[in-house]
Length: 462
Ligand SMILES: Cc1cc2nc3c(=O)[nH]c(=O)nc-3n(C[C@H](O)[C@H](O)[C@H](O)COP(=O)(O)OP(=O)(O)OC[C@H]3O[C@@H](n4cnc5c(N)ncnc54)[C@H](O)[C@@H]3O)c2cc1C
Image 1 (cartoon, protein in one colour):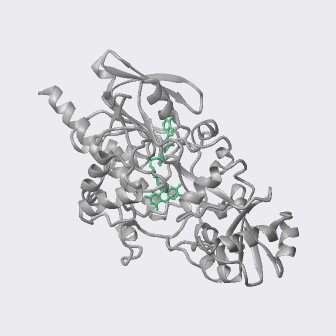
Image 2 (image 1 turned 90 degrees about the horizontal axis):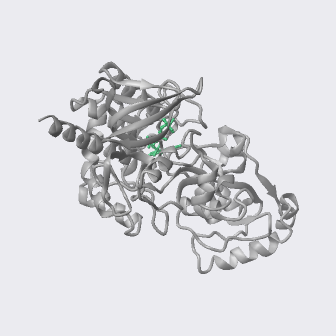
Image 3 (image 1 turned 90 degrees about the vertical axis):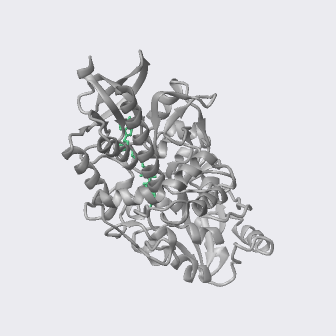
């Protein structure tokens, strides 16, 4: 039977699963299989990401205590301390490991901590289009190449659909996506790394909000929550399930992929009157675009919103983007995003069909006195941009300990079951939807999980 037994099966060849697989291999684990839903190099989000590698917007080589504090601050104390500590302690090692793999990393902007470690070259991508010359895609190509050339096996076009622990090993059901044939693999260790559940409309509506799946998907489509269902079936605890990481995008991004992931409309929308076609103004003030994005996604009609603002905002906030990528003014217009312009609020009101827009603008201007992020709408021309929440990934997920072991409701480790990357929970979240970094946390917990698995295998063979 040993011949048919994999030491490790990894569910999903994104940055998290690949890191776990490649590092386990480096540590002497011999039979490592990645099962990947997509084709060549996988349908993972790192390939289309911005490639900025940071923990909670800090520098990967900041002091661990500084990183730890940043994680706890941005999540307002809700991150699991053990995970935050492990994350902070391993960031420097993770970036050094990635560079050792031959991945090209340099600063996109060395003055900004979260831009100091970025995959190179840095140019921005559009939608799901794979550009093999971009740094993030090159990173994934390099890791696949290293894994395959050292004896690793990848089964592309295949999805894990179920897994059960039988007599101390995992029986893993895999469907071939071309011919629908189902086979069973045996694995001593199973690593769940399928990237979250943002592309599964039912799960998004169930966990995030009843209409949240109407939002724009600002991600690949392969993140269907299969690992979440497998983990739940096997008794795992899940945490933070109602929050998403995302940015405000043009509503037209649903059909025009030149409009996502950039330009993000966060900065412009945060200062605007955010109104909807039902004649309502969002009266809450948000400190960041992720929080606004969550509020829109959880609303009754996520695809009904407009950001209404004046010329001052169009000339300032709409030209500003801290990520160094495309901005609303002028990229939104040049890429075909709708924008309404009028010399009076009355005219704007009839263009977008929001009859009480004048009242809503007055309410917004009055709220400005106490909510100073809002910018008063005073200076013609006036603008309205149809906006939507763009879901990049789901923040909540499977709870693990610091070594990647999946925990049950009593927070005890389930035998030989691990989870890494965006399918896990326990770090991102809190009242303001704090985001602690997707690539960096995937690298860190991929490495830690591999070390844990390798040391258990070593112990078992002594
Ligand atoms: C547009 C965009 C920009 C981003 N920019 C940044 C950034 O600049 N910095 C940053 O830190 N983060 C960024 N992120 C987030 C970051 O990309 C993710 O956090 C990270 O890639 C998650 O890695 P993962 O391996 O957990 O998941 P994924 O990348 O989603 O990989 C999961 C893999 O599992 C496969 N899979 C799914 N289901 C199955 C199944 N049933 N069986 C087998 N395989 C399966 C998928 O095909 C996929 O290849 C960005 C994301 C997006 C979408």
